[in-house]
Length: 604
Image (cartoon, rainbow, N blue to C red; front, side, top):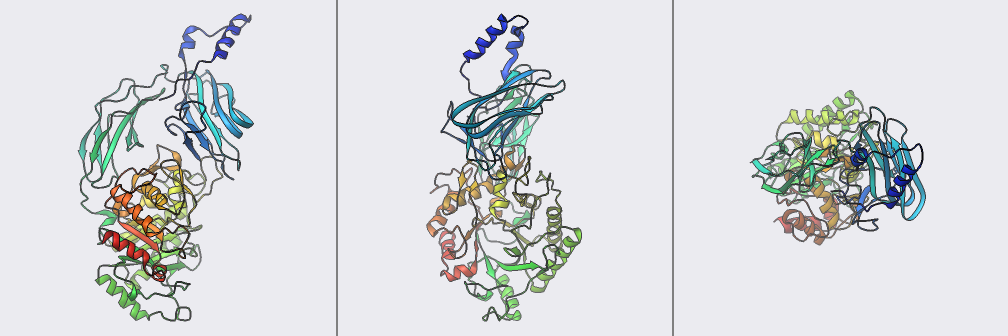
């Protein structure tokens, strides 16, 4: 709900002047009555609802009025723009105004149909009002208003942004909140809802646990992609051209038990421990024979299969030579160890990529070579499946590839096609896992590809279309919650490595879903908890972001029991969370199996 703003004596004075000046005619009382503030949530009291921001959040201080204001921080290639598309009347005059703080802060409007406008301040150490006026074109029914800073400068603040003029619907009033919200059916992965129609509403928006889920023109909706045996809260709003109503009373529903299927029917235990085994190289952790990996490890990823060149698609798995790994077992003993692990119910996969293995399937020929060469590795060693650990510049998005549900970039499209082919070839028992970095997944909450205005890193969120396309075939997603910069969580606060809070916030995003690049109409849906494991380094030697066993326990307590949580509030409780992944088995052995012992102590 928009804030009620204080009266502005200056406007009354200007009106009197207009009446007194010959040749000027004041607006008729009928026209003046139609004027309204057509901007939504201009005071940011409802967070960023109604706004699309590349790097924004809301803060409680400083504020111009009310209890919230916008804070946005430009980067070297991002001016931290926040924008909103507003319905307007053709051939009408509007005044855009707002209060800002900071250096080089802009306020403007695009798509006016006449001359787009903007105003700015070079320096505003305290709140400063910016204001500009424009007239819409003869066919203009929408304009985009925006505020932004300047590249590489410090954070700026904005509050009380308004666009005053004739209301787009002619009434200037949003509809009433819907009544009668109820559930009509519940399954293990979906909840069907219905509600009473609202007079004057053009559309309805469904919220799940406070996060926008979907928009519909009717009075019913089915929310899918839910986790089994999990409680959810739902609300609905009504909208017209004047804005969005308040949220309805909440209704809760608990999904049924999981009946299995999809990527989860691969024989894994309820809670699994996943680790990477250094099979093709040596480092300071020492070589570990596969037969010496303890039975606690349920999935062993052989690191790594690498391409003959970045764009060839030709993947080769070469075991560590005895010149580098003097204690390495023979090929025959290695095959025997694989069979022994499988006989004990364990899964052994080939992991493709890694830090040094850049894989870019730029052509269909590379795609086909990838399928045949990976198949050859799986068949030669008798493996259970495949782990995709594409890092660096393996995946990036072409300019204008902005819809993660319908990607067009060749390296993305070809990878999806290749993985679907492999899954179809080997069937339902084929284990498919992925180990992306946070930059390629959770960072997509703020940024996706080059962005609407260009200039962003094209790798931002680049794994999202792959995960989405393979979600029914995916056994496990274990994002690397390490070697990461700060990432914004669903609370619109940045979270950094080093404690349970980071793992809780990053995992909550996967299990709750999130709007991609801040677009509430383009939501990445949640994964099932049995598809998610949390990636952590085994020791301080293994990577940045190590956390002590107590922090691992806090993470699991919060996500599976909603106890022992810190400041971050999760959007659910997931006792079926699959487990933990670590880099690596070798480094854990080097540290006297600390990570394994933490897992064993928690899950038994």
